[in-house]
Length: 488
Image 1: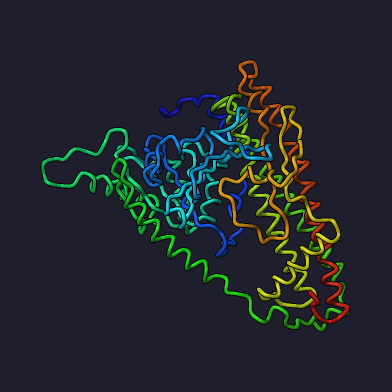
Image 2: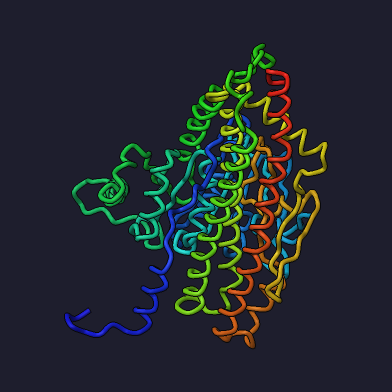
């Protein structure tokens, strides 16, 4: 911009939307990557790099098998026969074939008899430029559980700001990052007559450009991928999976004979008001939990409005809001798990003193889980909150309701509470795709109303979850005080 030139009004509004509310990025994952968590390689990269062709070569299949609708994720796992199913939020059962007529699936599941998939799964993500803030958080959460990322870039491409920001985040998480360089749309550079390898020069140029911004990835492997040949990538990933599998297996040694050892209460607990102090901890924890989720919802509102006004307009509203709700559900789940963990630590410190050993902590968690089930307070493990066309919330229950939401299914949760499920119904996609619903003002009003309904329902649900844990945990502590030892 020329010195002294006046900035357009749209730029000023854009800056105000970006700076109104700012909170730290939520934790993408709770950090409990155990030995039973399936290994997975998360595949991503810019559009035009030939990522799907690399994936097809890696899986030894055709390109059509690894093609999914825009904005969807492809999860590939081992199976005796090839099978393709689509998981669509709002449906209790997966759909066979490509997808669903009302909205794109969050995840398309592909099984393949490829022996490589016995070592690890593969999750293909949307292009980096289309991820946005929420999509990056979803990718980071999947990468933290899977353990590795394969970043595919073309020889004729360069790292843009979205790529570098994502790679910086990945470097901070400590996951293994592999780079695959393809010929791209223009092909490998031509030889210059000096006898130098143009492929090696192109790979080195990309590596130097990356390290100028993300030096933490200096040890990341760089692998050129000729058309149709991903053997080097396959070998590198299989070697990584062997190392990572052994590392995870060593993290959680088997439980020993001390799982029933005597744990005595603190000598000072009899004359203390431990119950009143624990209730105070619970109230403070619920307040922090609700506040964090409310602040993130405020940021989501700003990002959605920015998308409507400055980017894709009302036609992109459903896809953007669904992606935001996906990231919000991961945040709410992680925050809720962290809150429960903190309450268990606080309650143990008040009654027993100090910090619980891992085996004692497992005993307490089992006792709390039993208390939730016995008293009928356990939250519905299959409840999903769906945004409807009216901006209201509909609850969908059933064993398969949550299975349609995750892009990289976990082996099983060990936490006390079930995950939080949020999504948009297919009718929202149909509504905002219609040409007659292209009014920006109506789209902004609808999104504000929908997010307000989500906030009311979600905060109520989170408060009820923590209260249920309190009602199940307090009897465990009270029994310990009465008998002088942990009975769980």
